[in-house]
Length: 462
Image (tube, rainbow, N blue to C red; front, side, top):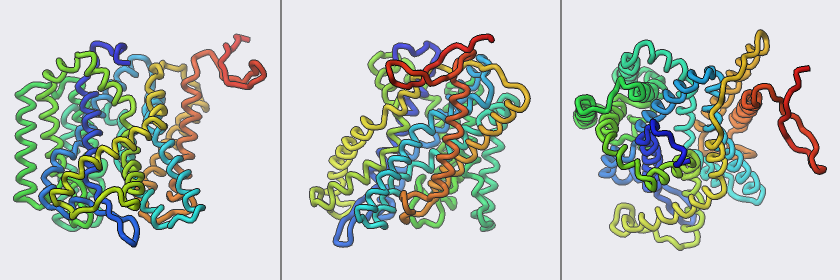
C-alpha cells in the first residue's frame, strides 16, 4: 500500500490521523484508574482525583484534529467521486461501509461475550459495567458517522460559501453556550454536539481546496488566537480547564462541546498548518511512510478495541493480585503507569491480530466507479433504502452509545438499539452488493468441484 501511494497524496493528513487516535488511546489508558477490593472491581477517572492533570487534557484532547483530517479526506474523496461520476448515494455507501464493518464486528463480539458470561453465572452488574466501559469509544464514532452522512450537503455549501460556513457554525455554537450557561435553557447547547464538529470538519474542506493555506500568515494567527481565547475562556471565563469530560462536573467542555473546545480546535488547526511543510519532507522517507500506512490501515480497529483492553487487563491484573494498588497520584502510582500501558499494548496487539483484518481488508478494495442509474421506481427505491439504512444504523449506534451502564439482557447492550443498528447495517450491505457488482455482470451461485460458491459471470445480451 505504501509503494502504491500517489505523489499528490497529503501524507501529513495520514500521520495526523494516526497520531490523534494514538494520543486518545493513550489518554484513555492513563485516565482509567482500576481498583479492587472485597466488593469486586471498580474504578475512577483520574481527573476526579487529581486536579493538576486537567491541563494535560489540552494535549490529549485531539479529536478536533481527527475531524479536521476527516474533512480533508472527505473533500478529497468527494472530489474524486465527482470526477469518476459516482453519485452521493454510492459515495455514502462506500464511505460508511469502511466505518461500519469494524464497528459491527466489535458490537457482535461484545454481545457474544456478554451472553455466555451471564449464562455461566457472572454478576450482571459487573457485565453491564464492563460492556459500558468497552463501548465508550462509540460516542465519537456515532458523531463522526453523522458528520459523514451530512458531508455531501456540507461540501456543496462549502463550494458555494467557503469559510463563511464554519464561521456561521461557530457563531451557532456560541449561541448554544449562551442559552445553556447564560439563560439555563434546557438542552440549549445540545445542537453543539453536531455544530461544533461540523465546523471543524468544514475547516478540513477549506484546507483541502487551499482556502486555508499552510502559510505562516494564516497558521500563526489561528494558533495564537485560538490559544489566547482558550486561556481567557477557561481562566477568566465560565469554562472548566479540562477539555475532556470530568465525571460529576456541572459544566463540561465536550458534552456538549463549547466555544472553549472550539478555540482549542482553532489553535490545533493553526499548529497543523504551521508544521505541514516540514512534516511532508520527513514523510517522504520510505520506512516512516510505511509505518504511517500500517497504522492507518487498522486505526479504527485500534480505537474501537482499546477500552476492551482495559476490561481484560483489569480482570487479569487486579483480582489475581499481580498489580499493586498504591495511592492515586503517589510516586509509585505514577511509575506503575508505564507497565500498565505496556500490558494494555500487549492485550490490544492480540485483539488487533484477531480483528484487524476486517478493517484493512476493506481498505484494499479498488475505488468505486460510476454505475449506470436505474430509471424510475428502482432508482427511488434504492435511494430510499439507503436513507433508511443509514438512519437505522445511526439511530441504533446513538442508542447503544447513550445507554446506561446497567446490564441490558440478553446481550448486555440495549436490545432495540442493537437491532436497529444491525438492521440498518444489513440494508446498507445489500445496497453495497448491488453497487459493487461490476457493470454488465450479475452475481450467481454456481457449483464448482462439488462446492457451492459465489462467482460472477457475464450477463448475455439476450
